[in-house]
Image (cartoon, rainbow, N blue to C red; front, top):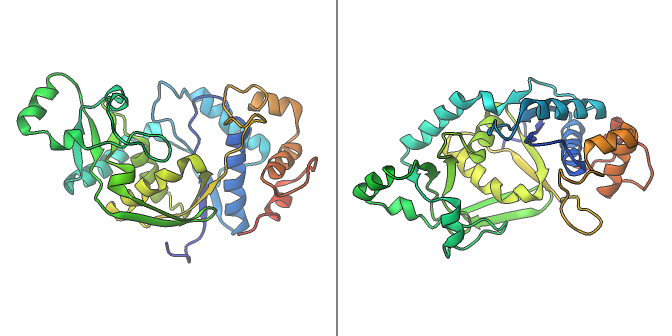
Length: 294
């Protein structure tokens, strides 16, 4: 990317429930990295699936962030309101011959012998890409298709701000991926790429569980004529037994955290868990910014 651009960061939660400590950690770190560089920071609500993401969960997330002192510098975007925008860029991919119908279900993929990516996701073997026109017509009588992007047999490379060099072969290691579901809802990879690009995001700070997605998003950035951002992926916070934190963990969700800690205490806890300060410290946001190294 052009390093002369003003830094723009963002936090983009999926409002399927109350935030937990891991979500707040990602929000705080994305804010800190943006502010350390004199940049702006905004909130985007990734509520593509409106049935799973009722608006009251989004309202709670925004309130929790404000309680911590994290205010969006720009308009808060709701992906559920942006289908027309995503359609425009979906059509751009289709015009390049990159889109095809896929009739495979998740059960089909689980039952197949398809290899899996590093995050455990089955790598799509391109089954429906090879359908004849007659086969496609027959499948349309049975099932409504999703739409996938055909990725090339080529290497993807970027330098992550935390994990360094990242390389993969798009076809072998990622596979063709869904950009529109069978119910017509646009999928995460397309929506996040379009929204980050149109919002001028220059730096994406998020959990390392999303690291493989960066390759797919960089591919879309290039096909849509956008300049990719920098990526910085963070180690995930875990429970004492080593398992990944969940919104089901009552002692780490924001109901519990707000009832038992002040914002300064919670910032101190997060910075300690990130290895940036000692245990028991209470910190303001300004003090936390001073601990960040770029």
